Amino acid sequence: MLNSFLHKLKLAFGDPEIRFRILFLVGALALFRLLASIPIPGVDKGALASFFASNQFFGLLNIFSGGGLAQLSIVMLGVGPFITASIIMQLGTIIFPQVKQAYFEEGEAGRAKFIGWSRLITIPIAILQGIGFLFLLESQGVIAHLGSVALVANIALVAAGSLLLMWLGELVTEFGIGNGISLIILAGILASLPASISQAIFAASAADIPAYFSFTVLALLMIYAVVVVSDAERSIPIAYARAMRGAAMSQGAATYLPIRLLQAGVIPIIFALSLMLLPQMALSMLASFKIAFASSAALWYTAFLSNPWQYGTTYFVLVVLFTYFYTAVTFEPHRVAENLQKTGAFVPGVRPGRETEEYIGKVVNRITLPGACFLGLLAVSPSIIQGVTGVTTIVLGGTALLIAVQVALDLAHKIDAQVSLREY
Image 1 (cartoon, rainbow, N blue to C red):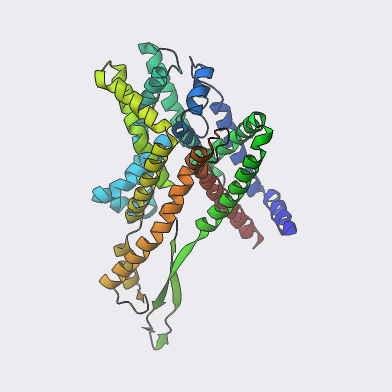
Image 2: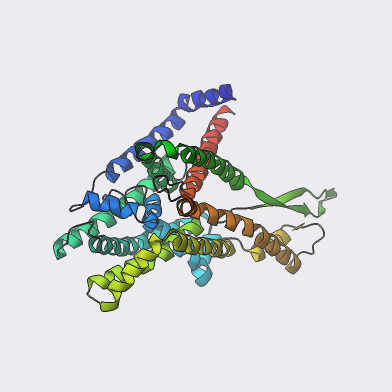
């Protein structure tokens, strides 16, 4: 196995095009990490560190910002606004027939139009998120009070940083290898590992060694579970009817329809985070305008998110609900049954049309439940560990593990595909 890996690696760097794509990816990620180390003006580093230490919710948001939020860098919003815009556009396929037609029926031209709309929506989302974060951090004493000019400058700075990362991610997708947006998030996760490990080691005592060993074993088991579940699927057998082609009778072929256990990926986690973030940002903005109830409500909501049990329970329920919701949005049994019927395919023992649609819908609903529960448990695993043990120096991020493993597997498959293509 090692020889095969070394052989693939030699072929990858021996081919000029693959070597260019890999080096382009490395250079783009290095530029991203450089941008993530440049803070916005007026940051109190001590208050920032204590704020993130006491609020695990914003630690999760830091994952999706690629690590820029923890430094309050010029790219502190990360690729979050673009991801939110993409989610809004996908929801728009349900509400607006024109969006649905562009996404599903117009091919590559429709996909390009869909991405263009997502880019335009990213701009106001980045501005609104920048305003909300700056007001929130100012109310927590993390940044100094900003005047009108400084506030506008910082909002423009962080919004432009988010748009720059969106553009950089698209360049990686086009000229590098893998999905650029996902790889930026992965780079942020990996960049935070050395600091987290060193902090945990220096804070450890002899009594903590068994707990640290148990957490390490648990992390390895979670990585294994993520790998298995990411590739898990339920196969529905599909058969094709015999057809006359000229004077010959063609035999019906047999295949299967794969339905993934994690059909929605990590999107439900992003949905849940966005929904939980919205009240805090809105209340912080209202509190900045000296509205009476907003200040007390913002303090209550911050305390609610700081409680690992309350926050974890709410987070788990939202992830499960959004898993079902997003699966229903992206996977349409009616469209699948219609396409099968058009191509002369059918599920053995099930009538084409309405019955096939109902059968596929039942299978999807049954398989979504274990996938949704697994996703929810991964999302709240840090809260469970901290609530049971009281240890806060170790944060076993199930969400970060899920993203890192899925993105790493996807990158490895794409590199392997490029190498295999050159071999043949």
